Amino acid sequence: MNTLDLSPRTLQTLAHTHGTPLWVMDAPTIRRQVERLRAFDAIRYAQKANPNTHVLRLMRSLGVKVDAVSRGEALRALAAGYCGGAARAPLAEAAAAEIVYTADLLDRESLDFVVQQGLVVNCGSLDMLHQLGARSPGHAVWLRLNPGFGHGHSRKTNTGGEGSKHGIWHTQLAEALAVIRATGLRLLGLHMHIGSGVDYGHLAQVGAAMLAALTVVHAAGMDVHAVSAGGGLSIPYRAGDPAVDTDHYFACWDAPRRAAEALFGHPLHLEIEPGRFLVAEAGCLLTEVRAVKRQGAVDYVLVDAGFNELMRPAMYGAHHGLRLIPADERSAGALQPTVVAGPLCESGDVFTQGEGGELRPQPLPPAVVGDLLVVDHTGAYGSAMSSNYNSRPLAAEVLVDGATARLIRRRQSVEELLALEAV
Ligand code: LLP
Image (cartoon, rainbow, N blue to C red):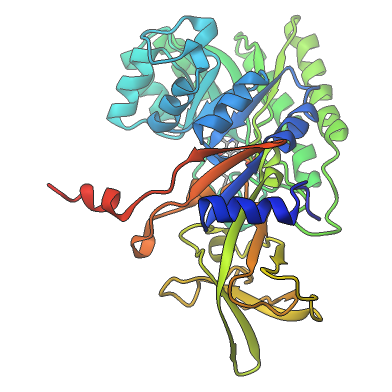
C-alpha cells in the first residue's frame, strides 16, 4: 500500500531538482493522520520520529503539542515557535505545557536547562525526581510508569516490562509519590508508553494498568489532572496490514479515564503521544539505481542510499515497500525477487532483510542504472536516525504540499563534516 499520493513524474522531478538520496515528506498525509486522533483532548507529537523544524511548525499550526527527549529536541520545538518561540526563561506555565520533556535521566546540562526554562518534565526514574526536586521545588512533573509489560514491532522497541530500562516500575509508584511530596514537586499527570509498533491486545491492556496506577495516586491523597496514553500506534507497512482503528483505541483509554474521573471527582485531560502514526506514511526516500548485479542465484540492485540514511531494515529487520520508477519509457518486465542494497562497506547494508540479517528479496521489475527506487513509509525514524557513517553527508529533505515542494533541509557537505575536526 502506498499512501503517498505523489505521482512517479513528481518524484522524478524532485529527484532531478534536489539530487538523491532525497527524503520526501507529504504535508496532506500528516494533516490527515492528525485528524484521525482528534477524539483525544490533546495530541502530543513524539518528535524523535522526525524532528525537522518545518514538520514541527506544521504540527504546531494544527494545534499539536510536542514531546522532547533531549535539550536539542526542546530547542527545536522552541525554534519552531512552541512556547511562544525562542528560549525565554522561565516560561509561563501554560506555555511551558506545550513541550513535555520526557526522559529516564537528566544529564547535568539538561537539568540546568529544564530548570531555567521551567519546562514540564516527565520523570522516568526516582533519581530524576530526587535531582529535580532538590534543584527546583515546585517544578511541574509527570510520572512515566513502566506497567510491568510492554510490546513493540521488535524487541528493541519494547519499552515495558523487566527487559526495558524505561519508566518507574509500577510497584514503586507510592515511593515516587512520597518523593514528590517530600521535595514539593507538583504532579500534573501519569504517563505510560509501552513500546513502538504495538499490537492491539497490548495497547488495550495499558488503560487498565493506568486506572490501577491512578487508584494508587488517589489512595495516597494526591491528585492529577492529566493522563497520557503514550505513543506506539503502528501503520500498515505491508499491503494487507490492518489500518489502526483509532475509535477503538480511544475507547480503550476513555473508559479508564472516565472511571478515574469518578474517583477524583473532576475531569482528567487525556492525551496521546504518537510519532510513527503521524508521519511514517507521509514520507519516502528517493534513491537512484547505480549498479545491477547477479551474485550466484541472487539479483542485486545497488542504490545510492545506505543504512546511514535509512537504518530501520539493518537495525530491526523492518520492512519498507519498494517501487521502481524507470528512467525511460521501456515496458516493465516480469517481477523478480530482488535484493536492494546500498553503497556502504558493510554486508548488512541491505534494505530487504529480516531481523536476523537474512536476505528477504522483494519482487521488482528488472532495474537499470538511472532508474529511481522509492522506499516507502520512511517518514518516521528515517532521516531522524541517519548518520554520517562512511563519511556520507546527511541527505536533503523536501516537504510537498499540493503543488508546492519546499526544501526543508539542505544536503550536508563533506566540508561541514571536516570543519568539526578543524580544532
Ligand atoms: N513516547 C515515548 C516516551 C517514546 O519513547 C516513543 C518512542 C514515542 C512516544 C513514540 O512512539 P511511536 O508512536 O513512534 O511508536 N526507532 C524505532 C522506534 C523507536 C521509538 C522510540 N520511542 C523504529 O524505527 O521503529
